[in-house]
Amino acid sequence: MVAGAAEVLAAYATEDVFYEHTSDFLFSDNASRAKAVIDAARHFPTPRTFAVLGRCLRAGPHVLRVAALDAAEQIGTDAVIPLIVEGLTHDTSACARRRWTSWRSWATPAAPIPRARCSGSSAAAT
Image (tube, rainbow, N blue to C red):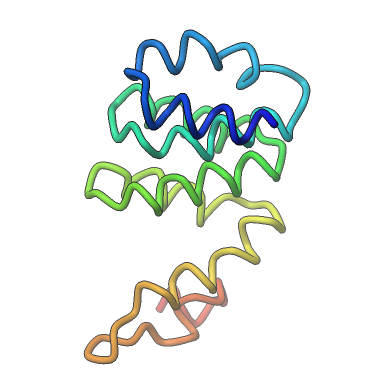
């Protein structure tokens, strides 16, 4: 129910109103409610949202890290590249699993990304 409410609020409210009404959920101990807010925050590609996503990437838990990474990818502007890099290089199993699928989705037929660069192996560093 929170997910639907957060999506509707994000679609029709201003950024200030959205965060005013969802910040309690975002910073609560309930990860599913916080994830719903993070998922809806993609509607606001602003420095405020980038700060929220960065905080979630750093603080966790894993479900929020992945949700923040997903939101940053959906925003898809140059401004979120540092967040995406931070999320994909985070040393957790959830982010490591996400790394290969994300990098593979960014590759184009004209510029494929070699698997060795995505696996985090020592061969990627050379």
